[in-house]
Length: 361
Figure 1: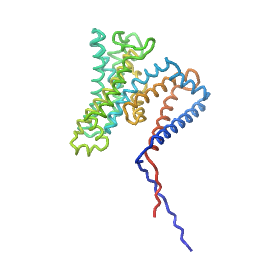
Figure 2: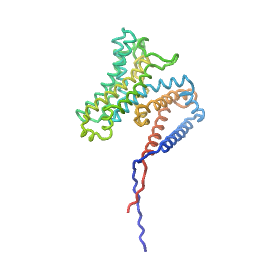
Figure 3: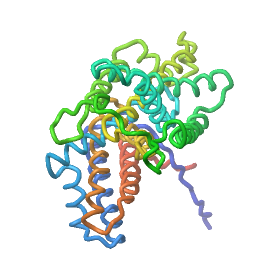
Figure 4: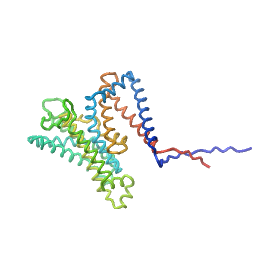
C-alpha cells in the first residue's frame, strides 16, 4: 500500500526583471475600473443615482472651463505637499509632517505680512513667500536634528509636530492674531496688496499654481541631474552603503528635510494669500496628508505628481458639486481617495512583482 505524501507549496514574491509597458497600462486600467466599480457601489449605498453621481463628479471636476480652473486651484497645495513627500521618501526619510509644515509656512508668512505690510506689493509678496519657505524649512529641520542627535524616529516626531503646530495656531487665533470683529478663531482679512496675483479673470487661479509647477521642474532637475540627487538616491537604496561610499548621511538628511519643509510651507502661504485671505485653522483640507497619497500614486516621480495632484484636485472640487446635486455627503471624497490609493498601489505592486509557487520536496 502506497503512502500518500501531501506536498505543500511555498509562496515566493519576486521582483520582475522587466516590466513591459502593456503590463503597466493593463494594471492601471484594472485599477481605474475597480475604483469606478467600488465608488459606484458606495454611491448606491448612499442612496444616489450612480450615473447621475458620476456625471456630477466629472462636471464638478472638469466639466467646464470654470471647473477646470478651480480644480487647478485645489491642486496647487497638493502639488507642493506631494513634492515635499517625494524628496523625503526618495531618501527613505518618512516625513509625515507636511500638514504641520504647511501651517507653519502660513504662520510665518502671516507674521512677515504684519511686519512689512507698509511695503509695495512687488516687495511685500516676495518677502511673504521667503518667510513661508523659511518657516516650513525650519519645521522640517527640527525632526531631522532630533533624529540625528537622539535617534528618535522621524515618523513620531513629525506627526507630533502636526498637532503642536495646530494648537499653537489656535492660541494665536484666539489671542494676539484674533479678528476682534468675529467670534470665530481667525485673523483679520489680508490687505488686497498682499494677496497673490490672479492670472485668469473671475477665477481664483493665483501665483501659487505657477510656483508649484516651477517647483516640480526644479525638484525633477535636482533629483536627476545633481550630485545631491545622487546622494538622495543612494540613501534611499541603502543608507549604510551610502555612508561607506563617503556620503554624509546626516547632512543629506538635513538638506532633504529643509527642502521638504520649505515646499510644504509654500503650500500654506499659497492657500492663505491666494485663496482664503485670512489665517484660520481650516486653510488646509488635509492637503499635507493627501500629498503623501499623491506622491505614492506618482511613484515618487516629481513630474508625475502634477497630473496626479490635478486629478485629486478635481476629485475634491467634484465632490462639492456631487453633494449639491445628490444626497451623497461630500465626505465620500475621502473614501474615494482611499479606494483609488488602494487599487493603484495594488496595481503598481502587481506590475512590479510576481508570485511563484514553490513545491516542497
